[in-house]
Image 1 (cartoon, rainbow, N blue to C red):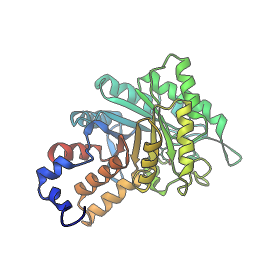
Image 2 (cartoon, rainbow, N blue to C red):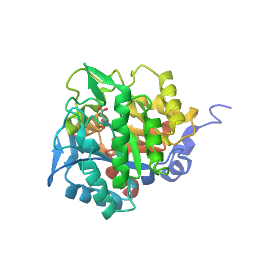
Image 3 (tube, rainbow, N blue to C red):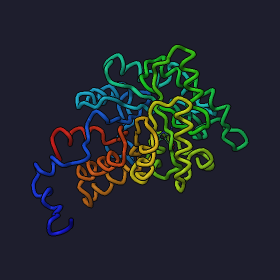
Image 4 (cartoon, rainbow, N blue to C red):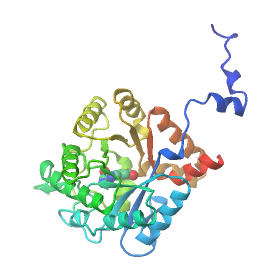
Length: 325
Ligand code: PBG
């Protein structure tokens, strides 16, 4: 049956009817707020991410308290060390900045889920996500560092670890390392499908982690590939991942949908720094309505199949969800 019997506009004619038939709904329960933590006191704004800061621990506690009060259940932490070196030593230090931050948050807000990013790039002088030798990023040698880093995070009180390095075998190595030390119950949120994307640029500005030479194409995925995403996800699941992530989000909605249809694990999507910066920049110029752009882009990730959203707009989303746009 077609027009004039069918008229799709019948169900679009009023707010209450539209609300009733809405297929996708967002909830604050599924938001994770990424935060950058550094030594010292106070905070400083990240030039390419207006509204986002490198936070000292006291400033971080203020921020996490605000997020928690808005109903945001989880944060993911990225560390900015005092000194960067070849092996990213501060990343593995039980007294490193992230480890200190985890302890501080868990002490103040025990119910807030603290996730840590497990990767050496924020801590290495060369900015790569692994051990470098003769201009190559070594896979197996990096796994040891990742396991050690994950253990120091969990010992400090992290609730979930999230490896973002894209070395082969790292989920399995971390799972084994955690289990051997009695941490069977700590979930792994794997950056399973992580593309070599230009949209990470503001993050690298924030963490000073742009690679000193070359790029990340020898370990992150080629943006042209779809089937390879299934292989990445399948391997991580076999190795023990509990949640699989697709990153970036908006330019890869097709991949989020594919992964959701193929696998039964919860799927996370990360609206990365460059996606944040685009919305912010357009809104600043008055070219987009910021809160509508935030809402629509998050709705799109959810509609594509994401169960969990990692987003720098988590607080704004929480506000939009409680107060409306
Ligand atoms: C690596 C890591 C990166 C991001 C999250 N974890 C940077 C990279 O791969 O270069 C990017 C997140 C973002 O752009 O918001 N530790």
